[in-house]
Image 1 (cartoon, rainbow, N blue to C red):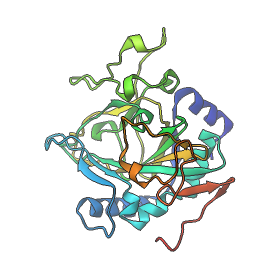
Image 2: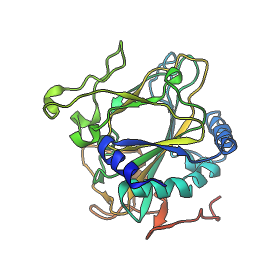
Image 3: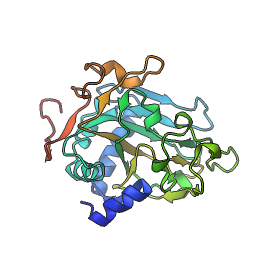
Length: 276
């Protein structure tokens, strides 16, 4: 669990190292299941499995809702340590999963993650109070494309639809400075994460990553958690991949089978055994 000082640090920076959240053997097992899903060997089917870049020399394999493809990833959503720590950072006693996401960067040809914020890419939910837990299934270091984040950027509001701009030579953020508060400093810092450890970030925190040209892969699993007050607020001009699963009306609390409740009135929800 986080201390009050750590929670205050998160409020200030928009991200925080969460330390170990699973054993190395648990991370290895999830990693093996991840590769099986990528290779088409899973029993279920994720909402998306694609190379985000469309470029074979800069590959970023995105999987959305891998929990639908493999029961071990479904169980991961309910990791008590993760859900309790995330709820501390949000400040809620009821929490659900918006969706999970893998962005796997293979050795040598792993592509970059362009600088962005998450919530503007989720145009059907409000408010912007979500927190993501990103768990490394192998060590994530600068060489294999660990995430970088800009401290304090979650306080600056949505930036041009979430796209920050990325310098194609240096992979540093290239924001529109006219859209930012006066006197702020855009100074990215690397977020290296050991296998089985986690980093948490706010849904408006700027983040990106360099390409992976190392001999190491960069497998990881992110879960985007939403507080119990998150509402469905559809946009007639913009949609989201998982919107087809939403079965509540405009302005109603977003809940349902495809948005598992993992914390209820302060109590961790056990993994539904009839699903796994």
